[in-house]
Each structure stands twice: as C-alpha cells, then as structure tokens.
Image (cartoon, rainbow, N blue to C red; front, side, top):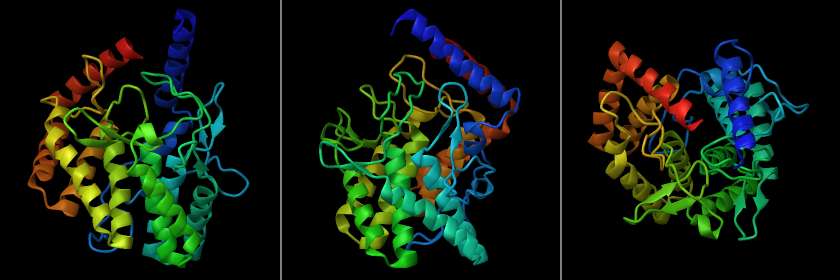
Amino acid sequence: MPVVETLASRGRYLRRIFEAYVLSRNSNLTFWHEKPAINPDLNVSELGPYYMTFEDKARYPGPFDDTGIPLLDYHGTVGKQYYAIAIAQYALANFNVFKKSGKQEYRDKFLKNADWLMENLVKTTHGTYLWPTFFDLEYFEKLRAPWFSGLAQGQGLSVLVRAFVETRLEAYLQAADKVYESLSAPISEGGVLFRDQSGAIWIEEYVLTRPTHILNGFIWALWGVYDYYLIHKDKSALTLFQAFTETILKNLDKYDTGFWSYYELTPQRLKSPASTFYHRLHIVQLQVMYKLTGEPLFLKYRTKWAEYEQNILCRYAALFYKIGFKLIYY
C-alpha cells in the first residue's frame, strides 16, 4: 500500500476513534458497544430466545432507513451503511424482547429485518450464498468491497431459523439452508471456513489471505451452526458444531495474555489484545459455550478472565498494551 494511502487510512481510523470515544459522537460504535449479558431464558435443547440478551441493541436509536432497517454511521467518506451483522443482531434483540413481552411491534421488527437478510443474500461465482458488505473497512489488510464475513453468515443463520419457527414459512428455511452451506464450505470454494495446518477448522469473521481467528466472531458464528442443528436435528450439523468447538478448546490458551484476553490471533508477532468491551464479551460467550457443551475448560477460562477484569492492574496493563498495539499496527 503506498505511503500516502497508508497515512490517509490511519488518519481516518484515528479520527473515527477520537469522535466516538472522546467526543461521544453517535457512530457505528454506538451499536456495537453494549453491556454483554447472557440470556437467562436460553434453552440448549430447543430453539428459543437468543443466547445473549442484546438488550441495548433493541434500543438502538438509529439511524434507520425508511423501512426500519438499522444503518451504521461510519461518517467521513463511508457514511451510513447497511451491515448484515448489525441487522442480524438488531433482529435477534427484537426477537428476545418479543418473546419476553409478547408485544407485536417487536415481532414485526424482527421479521422485517429477517426479510431484509433473506432478500439480500447474494449468490457467488462458487454457487454459495453470502451477505456482501459494500464499503471498505480499515484492518490489517484493507477489506475492499464487496467483502464477506463468517460472523454475518452465522448470526444471519440464527435469525433465519427463528423466523422459520415463528412463521413456518418455508422461504426462511430455504434461505437458512443456503447460508448453512457457506459455513461448511472452505474459503477457496466460496465459504467462510478455514482449515489450518493441524486440520482444525475455523469460521473467519473477516475472510482474509492471512486469517486472524477473531474469537468473538467465531463463537457467535458457530452458535448459528448449533441453531441449525436444533431445527433439523441433523447429525452432520452437530458434528460440524463439535468440530468448531474442538478448535476453540485446543486454542483457547493462545487467547490468554496472562492478564487479559486477546481479541484475535493476528499474524504479526505482537497479538491484538481485546478492548474492555470485547474482553467482557468473551467472558459472556464462554459462559454460553459452557452451557451449550458442558466443557469445563470454557468455565475455567470464563472464571479466569472474569478475575482479570476485576483486577485494576490487569485492566491498566491491557489498556496500555492496546494503545501500543494500535499505534504500531493501525
């Protein structure tokens, strides 16, 4: 990447962070950074409310398009954008509120966003169906539109199967079948699955030439595979979920800094530490994984990382580490 473009990209990124964190300006981060919480009504044996509450996401203040689909505001040259991950999470948040309150307005919001997801699936040249993102995103490798996300596929799948259960409309199930195929297909064949040198399989939140194995995105995405299993009771879907789970169990220690959790396993020598939000999200996700699988290692790391979060020295160490990482790589 030319030096001028690199500096411009870095400037846009730093400005966006400054506006969000220092000026508290409404931005794309307004949607993402809620307080993570496990859903006390989750059911591991049948499809029901989503595993996390997404309570704050149900109260997202906008912007929205004219039909009520949430947009994320990236400001600058990017502006307001549709983002399948956000639309899926907003749908799941409203589904949870509907199931708890019984209010029709939340069911309507859920189905409206489920419809958007169903209608905006795009068939790739490989014959798979994915949700493209139509704006560039600054990352280790710049994500150039249209780009794809395993997280979008997993959480979109969680929406579609719930829409099917709620309405019994076959169109939702047919769309879910298409999305599931992308989660079981390798990246080289138009899917979002990556197989490493040891044979372990990962769902990549960002499909890159050098995979970064983002932890929160992988976990959220594989819940979609579990949801698909609950609908079909298909042994192959359960086997796939178990294989993804085994990958996390074998690599969970790599996400432990000794005082905090890593956000991802970046190809650089210096790994990316989780922000406070994502560290707390990891804790909740591991709690859900323990409930889904009964694997004690998930509970072990959930407890360990919760203790880090309560330790002020660990929090400061994580903060300075994060600042240093951002200055070097972003």
